[in-house]
Image (cartoon, rainbow, N blue to C red; front, side):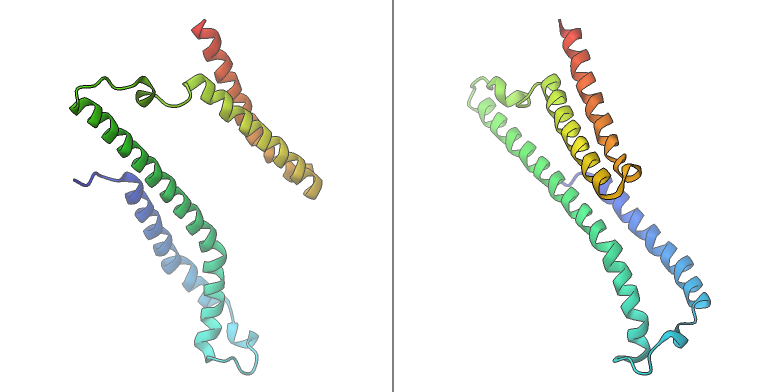
Length: 169
């Protein structure tokens, strides 16, 4: 039985809206405002069709390839998580069918929630500090300060871990 996938619906709606915006807004404006025929060399292999298609394909590849990469990575991550959860459910079902008790390590995550927050916080803190240092050395602090976002999120995760630890005591 197939379940409703809200992520796929949102993704399709976003792609449809972007395509509609491109067709109704950007292309007619570009066609009206750009005198592209004066910019062309005397002879282009493929003629006028190539003169129009090459820049459009280049723009789609420059902006579309990273977006497609992010979408594919997210898709693979979600499918991996779903498959892992399905395998875990099957293992638990086998224990229940055989009348055996389900081991505790199958029921919970590998790390308890507070330890997971500390782990994620330290990783984000290190990544943010490294990114800040790298971007500051390459482009100055105005761009390097973007890495401070990761530092802030990492510190927040460590604070959550600390508050959960003191609350548990």
